[in-house]
Image (cartoon, rainbow, N blue to C red):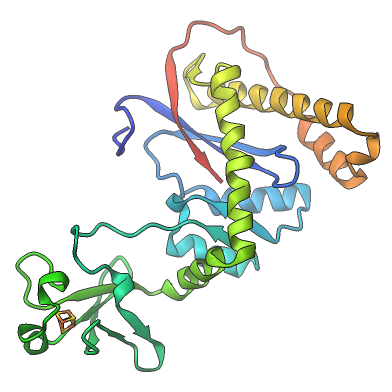
Length: 274
Ligand code: SF4
């Protein structure tokens, strides 16, 4: 695995989902470490909705999941995503794409000098490219901050599904969106930290997807049992409403084969959040 800010080597990824109300783990999925975190996301979402008949209205995701296919996929499922986003790669001190305003009716971008960047082409990756007029840029007072590298015009890229990303962006800036996104830190982030620190999930005990999956399943079951026991001890049994109890029972009723734990052979370094 070769990823930014991660050690290099042989790893697995655990993709995990939790419910926002009680932080119960509802899905654990293991993949090799060399896949993109976002690849299994929509498939796992569908799997859970079908398995548990969840009536999912919102999901909270970190910035790694802010992609056009995920934003579009959520909208198609009528699920509102509260997904963080970050600025794409850009030169320090230069204008980012945020400085350019998209005008839908004319399918152009307006630049900070109130000039239009017009559509030029669509790349194989599904990005439409809009370019400025070189003659406008030559005499523009913003050119030092706007033009990148040795270019004498500016290019802005827009994914063909960008509108889905923009809707998600608007929602995560709203009060409800902020609240939902904030729950991530209190739920799934913690759900990942605990097994690494308290349940030995930082390292895999055995090699192979199926064996790592068993270790992850066992860890998730232990975490869920602890969580449920804690909830029951704090309140009466009605705290767990009937529907949730049935769903949890269904989830926990999996026949695990418990492997005799041997020396760690590989490390789980990336835990991707879904
Ligand atoms: S350099 Fe060109 S694209 Fe940039 S603000 Fe000026 S006219 Fe607009």
